[in-house]
Image (cartoon, rainbow over all chains, first blue to last red; front, side, top):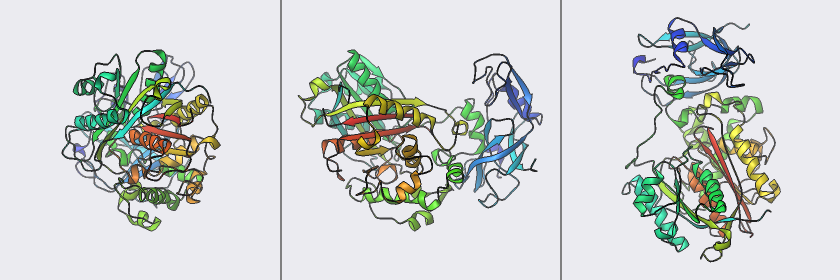
Length: 138
Length: 379
């Protein structure tokens, strides 16, 4: 990809800081509800399923499958076209947007439900983005 | 049907649509509003409620010289105007105001006096979607469709057929931006925008506006135009981030808004003569037909391919040519409402003979919100 520093980088908030500290440390962090055990994303200090504030942060496996995607032919800042914009199904349940990297950016190489694993790409001193690459089936 | 309480007595679009660099966005609101007041035979002093999205209702009311006692600035994207209709009907019914003006204007193409919208990098979308390179709606709204195609067997050809059929409708409409017939091959060989979407499966980007005036059905007979009454409405929202939709093959917001509108109207699907489903991209009529219950899950692609929604079909859909061929300023919902009103007044360029019940179904954001309005000309 072209100069990644030109990308639209996230600015963490108090509620999301743990997630971005995690990616900078090479961990994908999710949250789980202590009351109903729901695992959820994006971050917030309460459970979106039952509204309990009894929630914990934990390290996710980083394993996922490809839920859906587009191949963007209109590059934005920091990207070479064509590139995937994907939504992955994390092993723990939630879905998240990402880019699938480490394989050709073609419909043939990007098969829905293919196994993926997280990889972290450092964008700045503070921010590393969780991207996904083809991984071994479980 | 239950008693009709509120009617649309004024409806008009801007004098020009398409490329209108001579008008700012605010003036597009005003141009539509002036045309609509003329349509209803009313002036600013007769209006006591104002609703709009994209601009502030305060700014629109002030610009037009209106003193409102009811204001609604609900802004949930392109279906905001469906929600304004719903909220205005409730406000008129409750006696909060008597005569509501709903305006839309958008300098989508020429960008004259338009603030634009971009999510803050600290918003959830700014943190968890923007870093991955989406470039506006063509790369976000389109994201669910590969999942739909795999789960329900929709083909690339069927997805292309949506655009082909809507161009057939547009060919009958002198105000449509694109009127030349196209084929499935034309669609599938047009420029790739965001696989699997090609240019002809993405909406236009144009300038324009439209407005509506609503008042009580009791008063409606005193107005010059045929009476079009609001008999059912629904609204909902799901997620500001398309990546967080519950299910990429169906819109929860569509289902909630649609079922509420059908229930309020007390109609069944066979009562519907004419249908508008906001089509920013070619997959939206497919999701809409299924989520509103006109066909079963996975059936909409074949339903369109079999020409049920085409001219001469049993369920005329997007008869102005839609966002794909008629116009799309950015927040298209107003134009869907305008076409429903034209069809029920009997003044549509591609008139559905004897149309009595029309539905205008809108989407806001990328499956973020939805509004549904059921209209009839049968008092």
